[in-house]
Image (cartoon, rainbow, N blue to C red; front, side, top):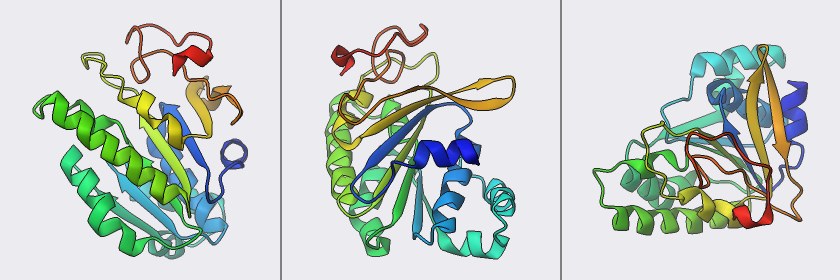
Amino acid sequence: MKPMSHYLAPLKPGRGVLLWGGHLRALTAAAAVWGVARRAPVLVVDAANRFDPYQLVREAGTRKLSPQEALTRVRVARAFTSHQLVRLLTETFPASLEQGSLVLVLGPVSLFYDEQVPLRERRRLFQDLVRLLARIKTGSALLLLQPRLPRAAANQHFGRLLAPVIDYFVEVESREGHREATRRTSPAVLALPAGQLWGGDAHAAPSPPQKGDL
């Protein structure tokens, strides 16, 4: 939990952090419990079908919190299409949002790679999503957790459009079973890696961050 606390330390109302990579099922639970431990209202929007309540209970135990407290204080909403996600954030979500909340969005980009929806429509919806996230961020701490896209996904660079709502970026990798942030930026220069989320070769390792990556 110490590494998680380190990565989330910049989070406060008005700031956004993006965790990108693997292990997001466990990291989502850890981040939610991190918010509960700080007495913040926690809302999770799961757009990647990765939220695990059992993991939440296990993480609560590491913080010496009761399972009931964690399950009661973490509200979860799921979306299975890009249209559902935007509608959820537009119509349903605002009623549950309190000032000073911690808002977790798991897979903010994932649903927009559904090729059954015309690309032009997906792009319009994603622009709506970014505007909604910017509005949420004005009074809440915003944490986005984005899994890597499948190798077969054709990169449409939706991730680049998230730049206005991101102040800190952490790429999460695994080394010998431990969570590790391989790259972190300051809010002054938002440098994003190449790869399947941000652009470039979807099969290549991320290149050193450059301002031009945006």
